[in-house]
Length: 156
Picture 1 (tube, rainbow, N blue to C red):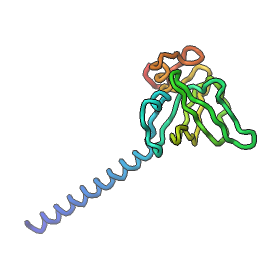
Picture 2 (picture 1 turned 120 degrees about the vertical axis):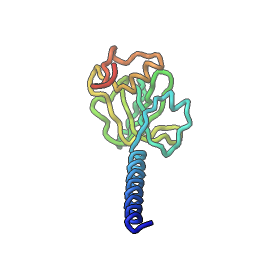
Picture 3 (picture 1 turned 90 degrees about the horizontal axis):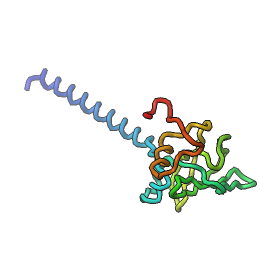
Picture 4 (picture 1 turned 45 degrees about the vertical axis):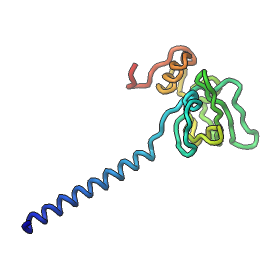
């Protein structure tokens, strides 16, 4: 090989190595930020790793909200009509949070309970997150409050 060919080969190898490292870093960063949506029925049917974070969605079951009087601890059940999952959360709940309303909680499943670090409530009477609406329809239950609109830009 001539000197020019060796130099070109080294440049090509350096570029390929750099692109491989950049791709590996990007994939690793994306995997750590991906959260899957899981319904209470999915939780009952699947064995989920305790250190895997995911989004739990459904309706807040009636009569299950228990707030601690001296702290920000709250416990409630999320249901899709077929199964319930107990959620524990420490913090201030959204203003629209109440029994019978749609909710999505972000957190981990530990010791049979879902430990949430963030709780989101739907924003008005007609909106329901598409994932929650799909899970409720698959379970054979219509969305609470009658018809619900899909999210902006979502398939109808």
